[in-house]
Image (cartoon, rainbow, N blue to C red; front, side, top):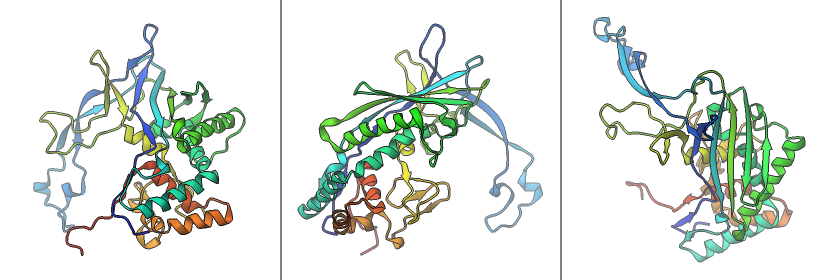
Length: 348
């Protein structure tokens, strides 16, 4: 399907910032705040001791015994606080049912037929279950998931609530049983409905209750700050924050970071099933390995499969089953983005 130049989808999952806070006897919301720390960091990079060629720098000029003064933001649980909370809201809208923008009628028709077939065969349930797993297992806490105890509660605009405890041990391949399974299935049903029905948009309020140690370190999001944009005298490392009406700031996860964790569902990048999921992306970027698991040469990237959308739809209609390629393509459409076909400068 190469008949379009402009194509875009609005994202279906819209998380807000995830804000860290704690409670006291007199307040249900005390923002967890960052503090400025100054340290003397040792010179330890490769370039401190070696030339670009790999030759060692002269001892008398390397000054490796000296330190680099560093100012950065750090964050720790206040003394005598043993329970921390992290909360965010999530809005789910059925934006993947059709393109937000497409400049070709035939391409729009093919994409709509793909979505209708996928929906009719219950494909959205698989995506919804995977999103629900990541929400309920607190995948969005990232490094902070290593804790003594974590419980997650989800309240939805349909006046339903779901609760799962001890999720610090829950991994992608973990089994779900008993009340935890009921919570997973219940939330999955609501997510599936909101992803596949425009009149059933959903709001979810998600809170993690974290048992913490004495003055335990917390790891919020760090915004990317270009050296040229950083104010003189500002910390080299800064955290994402949310400002309260009284001016105090609570350290937070950015909405993008929360969304990235929820969308870590792509274990279809290997035919036999991968051991770990990737965050859904057009080329299957694996940040930890600095590799793309869906390079164009594999024909498993989003754009290659998008060109085969008609044959994927026919296969679903014929077998009455939804394959991994269909799930992956739909997960990218749920993620949303601009998929127009441009040409890099210098290419013809």
